[in-house]
Image (cartoon, rainbow, N blue to C red; front, side, top):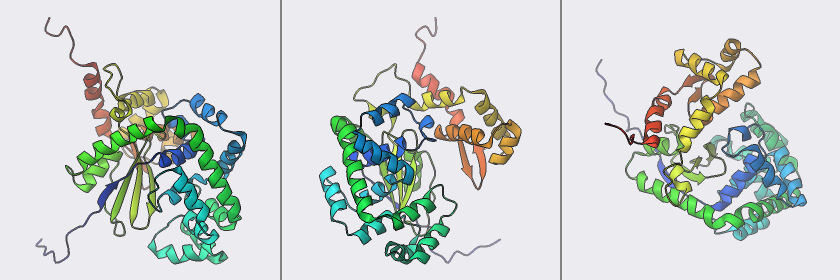
Length: 352
């Protein structure tokens, strides 16, 4: 077949990088208030319990509020409105926002076609609020989040955000701010050096462990490193922008190299595979792509339990989902022998 292409070439996005301990604070609040995700994170349960215990009782109450209404999402959205030099400038920004602007910035961006509806919802129009909820009805928490943002007294929301962010930052970021900044900056510098060596799409896949093909409305991809939510990459959207909060690389965590420290990728993979049920799932998915329902029927047990196992496999980048089907990322398994051999090094007695 002869094809004549008279269209324009396929365009892609440009990639930007940014880092700030303010994002680390907001993501820490997100992690500690998300019960289902914590078992998949690097830090053990006792770590998260201790973080909560170290907070002032008044801040703990705000943390409970954030857990109920997912207001960590509000903090992240506000952080993307401008570049903030420090905590003080961010808190001042929140303080100076009008009630209508605070509500608008807190409501999630759901696409250019719904921006007018978003403005109407921020002004209190009930039909617009319902339209936003309907547009994201399948999302895990957006419908309830939208309802809360739309109807809560804005001074209540403002005071909650100020107290929560300052309380968490003072307790968990400020004492370690130098170390946190050093880790984030190391990873930022490393990624920035690699950005010009790869295409935009290849760079995003390398940095985030996930592919992101261009979308018509997206001209910019923003990558933000984090430590607290490792090993997960979190996706978000803003006007014209796709945001990835990605886990810093293992080497960025330490000033010097410890030859006996195993790569976190290897640790996470072996930890996740050290379970009979998850190995069964890997075997099933090695044969073909399957849905959650199909996997549940084959494995037996509760669907929620199977979903939990799949979440752990996804956290180690061994499994991915698309269009309600799960597939095994065989290339990740294929890397394991090389990762193990690289860690062990050459045998000292080789050749004897």
